[in-house]
Length: 244
Image (tube, rainbow, N blue to C red; front, side, top):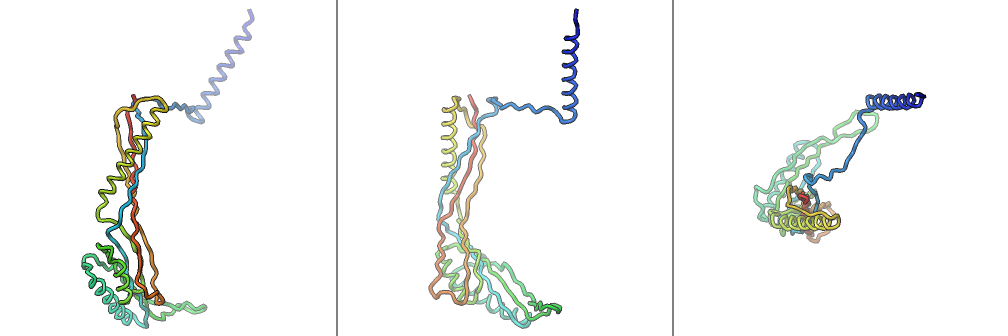
């Protein structure tokens, strides 16, 4: 009886498993991926909802910058100017708790001419007031009054809301409705039945509106017109359903 073919087959099998053993030692386990169809995993679906809301609160920064020959002179000039700006803001009914000094600095200015060490040529001073405006109808008047009083830097104009609860509720309802519609469409198309919602996650990405301005000596004499527009509240939800 000829045993050679059997021996050859046995040797090939042994050689194959030996190679497989060496490979797994060098490269790690052979990847094995299965897409889970376990009903316990549930079915996830996302939805987005948006709602527009009219701003009712404003924020802006009023600044003064001056230059002079000495630190004392720029400090004195700065104090006079920023006090006038502050008084102008208070005169429009803004509470002192809604006005905060955001920055105050005095720095030397230098001459960096080539071939010489930097030389102090004077000083500059700047300060900013962060103002919260609870009546946004006053924002334009505040900017006009502040610039008339001496403010020469305006920035950080932003509009938001004291309370966004109603808009968030509207956006949330739209997001959940959208997610449920997606889930029902998918279940019908694939052929499974939805059970109860077993998990809910939410992400609120409301976006307050920002505006920016530059004020200079050549500005138009017409009154400032900064428009608050509207803010958009965006809520994203994820629903996880049981699958029947």
